Every structure is written in C-alpha cells, then in structure tokens.
Length: 122
Image (cartoon, rainbow, N blue to C red; front, side):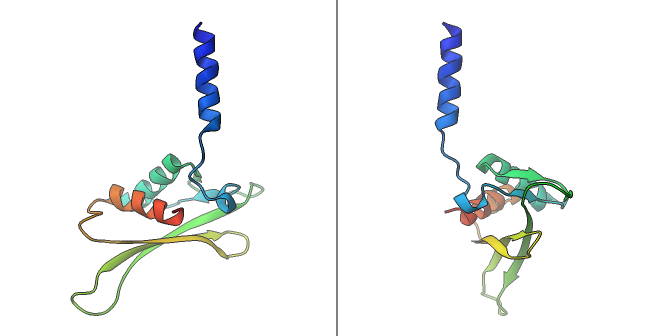
C-alpha cells in the first residue's frame, strides 16, 4: 500500500508545472555574491525552480549570470527600484529581467528577492 502512495506522490511531483519561463529552463543561473541580497535572490530562484550555482565553470550547460542593482531617479520623492537581469554568459545578451519597487511592500531582503524573481517570470 505504501508503494502506491509513493508512486502517486512521484506522479504529482512530475505533473507540477515549473514557474520558470520556457526560454530560461535550459539555463543554469550563477549568483556569485555573498551579501544578504544575493543569498536571498539565489534562495528565491531555487524555490521558484531555477537551477542555481555559485560560480561559472567551463563546459557546462548554458549559463546566465544574475545581475542586480538599485536605482532611483534624482529627487527626494522618487521611489527606489531593485532591478534584476539575467545575462547569457556566452553572448552577454539579457535573457530575462524584472524590477521591484523598494517600498513598504518589500521591506526585507527576502521579500525583495521573492518579488524580483516573480517579476522575471510573471
């Protein structure tokens, strides 16, 4: 009886849809930073279904580097944004991107990371 439950659980996992956009599924994502935001972005990407690595290595499958930065237009009342980009490490082309406003809706590094990863793949 327990083997039937195991089979059902495996089938359910196999049928689960990936949140990763089709064009990004074949990529490994490299997140090299050790700061809090980098670690949370890597964690959120893994939870979302991305295959995440800490460093580049030759001869591996297609790889994208995670690049992120914050930006705000000049002026005291302009909101700050967290931008994320996925760049193909062989061509340099941006293959995925997203942005999240740094306001009270995403007050922690964890919340910003989850929102940013979801913004890459709406």
